[in-house]
Image 1 (cartoon, rainbow, N blue to C red):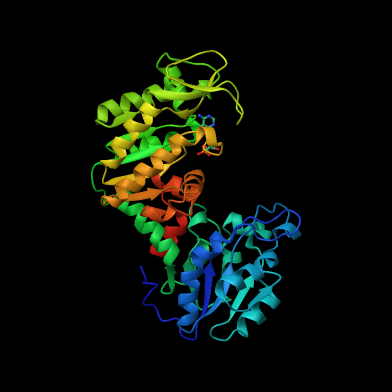
Image 2: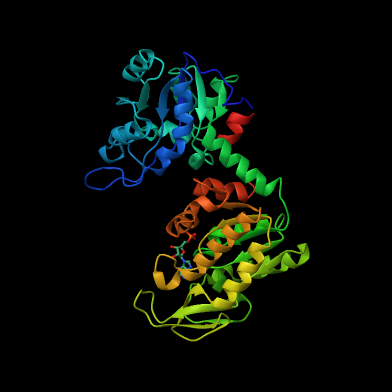
Length: 397
Ligand code: AMP
C-alpha cells in the first residue's frame, strides 16, 4: 500500500473522500457536532502543508431522489473553514463543468468542496462511469472515510481503480485499520470482547465471529435477556427477541466447544417502567418478576465484568450495558468504561466501537484514556463480523 505520510503531494490536486456526514440542526442547518470534520483534519492539513490542494468528496444524509437542500454540503462550508483555518470553495455539483473548472483553477494550499456525491444514484450503485468523472478532477486519491468503508460506492471504491499508483488511506483511515488489526490479527491475550446494546439480532454475526478469536465474551445490555429466557429464566418485561432464543443457545454451545468463556450479567437493575422516574431495584437476572424490566447490569455483574476486563491485554467494546442515556441506568456502562480505562493504563490495547459505546465513553469523559475510539459504527461492526470492507480493499490492493 502507498504510504500517505511519505507520498509527495507537492503541486498535486488531491481528491479526498471524507466522511463529513455531520448532524445538522433541522431548522438552521448549522452543524451540531463537527467531530467528523475534526477527525479528518490531520489528513487534510498534512496534504495542504505539503503543497497539495484539496478536492473534498463526501455524502450527507440519505437523499433518495437527487438534490435536496437539507442534504446540501453547502451547509458545512463554514464548519470546514473553522476547522482548517482557510477558505473553502464550493462546487454546486460534484461532477460537470463547474466542478472541473474550479478544480483546474485550484492552487497549492487551496480547498474545494464538492456537492453531495449521493445526489447521484450512481454513487451508491458503485457506477464506474460516475467514478471516472470524479477521478478526472484530481491527480491522486486519498480515502479517509472509514465510516463508509463497508460500502462499495463509487467515491469510496470504484474511483480508486483510476489511480493504481496514487491511491492511499489517510491518517484517520489508517489509524482505524491499524486498531482493528491490533484486535483481530495481532491479538495480545487474554482478549475480552464486550458486546451490549438492545438487540441480539444486530450482534449475532459479530459474536459468532468473535468466538473464533476471543478468550472472553461479555454480553450485557438488553440483548442479555434473550439469553436468560433461552436458558429457562423468567425476564418479566425485559427486552426479548423470541425468534432468537435458539440462536442464543447455539452461541452458548459453540462457546463451550471453542473454550470461550461467555459472561452474562448475574444480576440486573430492574424497573417498573422505561422511565427516569421509575421505581427500581436489584434482582437476579434469571428471576425477574412480571412487569419489571432489566435496564442495567447490577453490582455483582459490574464487579465480575470489571475483573475480567482489567485482567485483559486486548479489549474490544461495542454496545452499552444498559440504558446509559438515563442516569439511573448508566452505572453498569460506566463501570465497564472505567474497567476499560484501567486495563489501558496497565498496558492493554483497548478499542471502543463507534455509535453508542463511543457516545457513552465520551459522556463519562474517558475517551482520551482508552487506546482508540472508532469513528465508524457500521464499518467497524462489519470488520469484526469478518467481512472484507470494500473501501479498505480498494486502497490497499
Ligand atoms: P445498539 O444500538 O444495539 O448498540 O443499542 C443501544 C441502545 O440499547 C441504547 O440506546 C440503550 O439505551 C439500549 N439498551 C441497552 N440496554 C438496554 C436494556 N436493558 N433495555 C432496553 N434498552 C437497552
